Image (cartoon, rainbow, N blue to C red; front, top):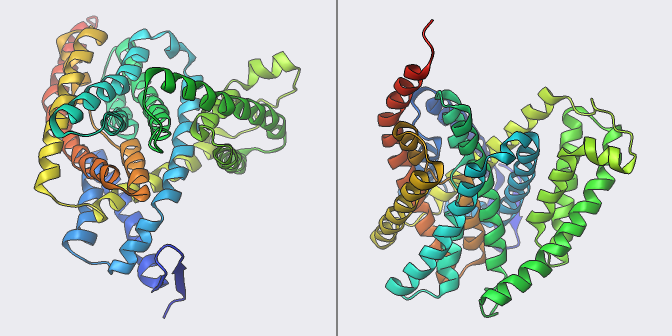
Length: 417
């Protein structure tokens, strides 16, 4: 018999053994799902969500206490996921400086979040009577297209460099913008009226504190990094990012933005060190070890969240119908964006349109709202759960149909041997 785990949230005890078995099984299932994705391109998100549904609402293979205990960890894992996502997002933006001149990718990354936020705010208010704020929250959350699904796919499809860069930058930036808008909108749920001037004022106050903390922490950590390296260096830096997140949150700042600034400072260590006169060791981090740790941490977060979402899902016709309408709106927005912003040949537009999968960031932000509780927050979570499933199914079908077309067009452009 295992030791007993006590949850302050549940005020109840459960055996540690079922929880440990469930966690181990979820990790193994995650590796299997990743292998299936690599071979068949069936999104691992669908496989993991299905496993979660089997464990929870359908199969009841876990006790209710075990499921409730895992639910109680949502806020903790949500904050950890935000730290990792924003940190890695900042590094990618810096590491691919040539992409910053890609205005199409920048535009898509912003519009992916901004347009759904505005459209769904109006739609949910006009059709279902939701307050504007909660419809905007739903739109901001659903502005992310899953980087962990999109990036591996576009790497395996032969695309022109500019289009590849646009899609890569879009998938990276829309996660950052989704978290930024989500964080700002969430600050209005305490009763403050949502107005354009109020939003701007809070954005300035909220973000200015975060920028100061991120800059100071980044500059200090640049000097510390001279003495740490390898995988340990990455873990120490990640720990620093988590500490920064917690401190800024205590000061009621935008903690996720602080982590983003922190990551940008570290990614630009060469010009910053030269400007301030720091002496930096260019080999301070062994890239292969660092990347291995990053991939494993990202894998654990993704696996846990998709299974977690399946376990706490509510299989409801009401939310399914909501999700169909929302998904249709997202598809229409995606079609317009790709046609008028990407401005490429039809075959490439088709594959860009197909890359609409919602994933990790949607799961994390929706789970954070679910952990807070409340009618609209719960509704947002259940709608997002259905939208993740629908967009992944639609994308899988479209990708299977368009991938051959793109490859054929690419070969046609290649010079004869």
